[in-house]
Length: 407
Image (cartoon, rainbow, N blue to C red; front, side):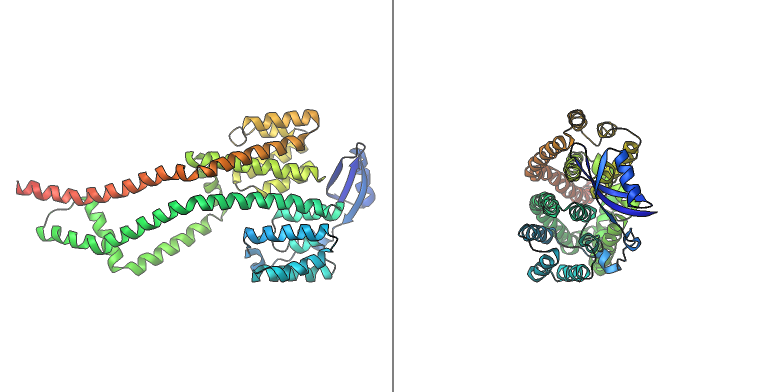
């Protein structure tokens, strides 16, 4: 049995693209004919390319800024639409990019293409740079001869992600500065000011409350073992980052983002918008429902959404509808999504309905990001007030004890 990439059309002219495991091309054509499709092109995927691409450790770990990816996709779209070949376009872009790592990746892709490797397989060697969506959309463009359209879809998706991240980053600047300033003030107080005040209490031989003892211990640790504390913080940060990359860590983080009141709404709308836009784009490009759901699941950021789409994919293979799949997860997908999807299925305009849903939730996300600072500020005030109040109580309690002893 071999794996084939194919494109086909229905009697109504609707395109379909996907992969199929079969003995030969004739079997692919017969299966598609039984589903009401006529085979238009078929490509045998060599065994070495069937999920067995040799990817080095450094290539797996490489990441490229989203801004670079946006520049790359935009310019590649222009070059391809102008009639340049893929190889020439990649060569030109490698000379233009300022990122040395990305330049090296593009040069390697160019060399692979010159050796006869397909563009999609050349990109697939760098999964941290070109995700499943990017690679699959390029593969769809290669098979169906719609590379320009595939690149335009990718450009829109990357632009949306870049815009969202830029707005979130901008909204977080002010809170980050406040938190940093608060931490620095706290360190100065604990290492320089507090020890002088605590010396007075030690001389009076007053029994200190637990809160005050904790603050004194923290002060001593920072003053006498500052280097050890700094190393411990760095190691803890690295450990947390590595934990979040594990399956348990990803699922824990996903659960928190779906249940934390301030973040839940943001998480639902981001994942819903991404699901609707990517799925709509893949369907309109002719990718089959099952293959589209596979790609969508891998591009969603939340593990619970990934599970839902994977389970939905299996159920759709058994005959259920997309609207039923969406309605089965009311905590993940708002009810309006399932209703609009059902209307799309009944009218044969599923792609259009999903695109409208994507645009609607993307606009909702824009409104949320505009108000992000106003949401974070009260939380910051509570945290700062709590920290100040804690230290104030820790300082005042021994004073009250001294006054009581005097009285």
